[in-house]
Image (cartoon, rainbow, N blue to C red; front, top):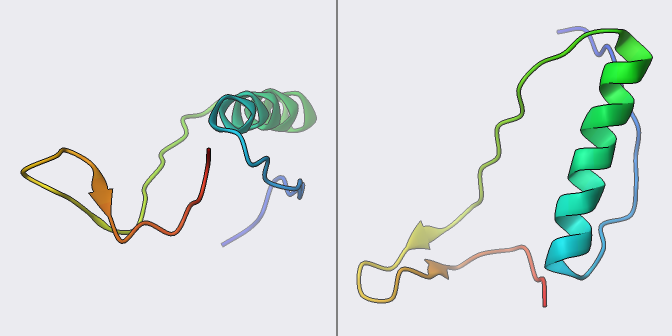
Length: 62
């Protein structure tokens, strides 16, 4: 597999800042590569059928 774009950035500890960072990285990748694409996201863990909250998650955002 070939990497067309790579850029590391520290993960913010705030949910909204994290979403903004992801959006800015997608914009940067599109500008750098001259291509557009889609972004898929997944999280480890399972969703509780009782609460709808993800159990055993590893991403700690306030």
